[in-house]
Length: 245
Image 1 (tube, rainbow, N blue to C red):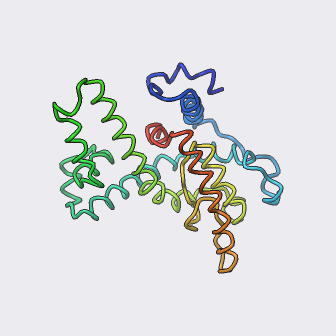
Image 2: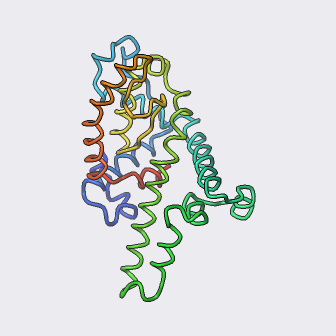
Image 3: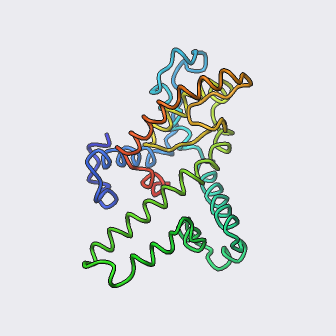
């Protein structure tokens, strides 16, 4: 369906490859239908995790995205993530939000000069930095995309994980293997949102009290991490996900 609706999102997909634009349109369609309640996959509650594929969780993912609490959790997590950045850089948090009631994550990263963001932005804004204004605009856009993506992966998604876990269906939340599958399915369904619902330290991992088992799984997930990086590089939609929500 997303392939047929790409033109509807052309204002957001300029500069993307055809694959990125298609993925963005697919995510936008999911978001636009967030108020359409969907039921879990029939029989999923009683099925064993080994009998399910990642696509089996598609309806549960859409239900999570359409949950009334999802946007609230996203906003709460964003605020807490911004507070962490400010606090880590000794910025007066109450004063910052008092002076910037509509502050964005980039505003917080700018005032904290997180990883040199303010310095790079200032350098790009200098008259002598670029020959053409279009070059400056593209460079600033790429810079903002880079730091928005960093904000999501390093601050926002970790904050969202444990909170979203509370609103997962019981048949997923109470089954470690299904929850691990759900994390991987959510990652691919949303084009790269690395949300660790059970705080195991890795998306798609199962954390138990068995130390040896955890070590074996950790070695196995090195390959999974490499594949994740390939997906991230191919899609590059982390910033688009942030814009959607």
